[in-house]
Length: 370
Image (tube, rainbow, N blue to C red; front, side, top):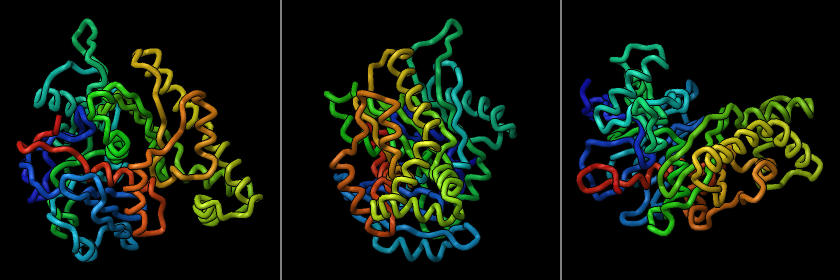
């Protein structure tokens, strides 16, 4: 397989990285790349200003009725963006993330080990797998293996996903899971020496699932998927009120601005508390793992992001499971996301992943910034 992205191929250089990014073999460009996220109903595109993390332009491009990207519509939306390099988060269903114990290898050898491990997980031919591994620890067992996250997908499937983007003029330079972008958005200032040991939890809540990401400084040290997302909240609300799912979803979305009648808002929060209880438990277990098992220390804060991250009642549900850890926003991050969210009927937190993709660090040699 070639690694020439212009021809629609997925670089074999992987789907992960020690600093929440996929290693890239592409040369550095001074114009910041676009962050492009496949979300539930369309594409989110974000670009920051050169030498700055302030949002320069943000656009939402809805999918067509068949759920596909229209290259012509995307090409029109790209007007006003500078350059065409893009860091892309494919649909969540296209990416598999699994824990594994692998030898503590480097670069190409580690990616090869991850590829074969992923082939077994995905039950597909290793020749059709593109994969990378994210080491979670530097400690090894007697066999020289350590805990890692294997991030993988079907090369053919990802190439098909990129075709309409390339047809519209974009040049994908790297692929990342969306939760990597969300994690980076809230650790943007953790590259400073005094914050390299700060531990944060970022919970990216989409429509169909959530990702619990624990970072230390600007590095991922833990990540786990949960089945709980906005759809689970809608189902619980629909059952409780005896209404259609579509009505329940609209009611939940209206509740983000607290514009509902108090009685209805209370029903939404009750439904979220019930449906979100298992997510809160999983977050608590992640905190215990990081605090007790890895002995990394207790997280300083938890941040919510994603399409369902602003759901009323979710913050309170999570706070009850992690006493002593504040669930808080980061002012300078929300200020930047506020500029992006003005482009559609959305909340700032929905733009965290695309923003995080847009600020993916590169050095002048095209590798990740240290």
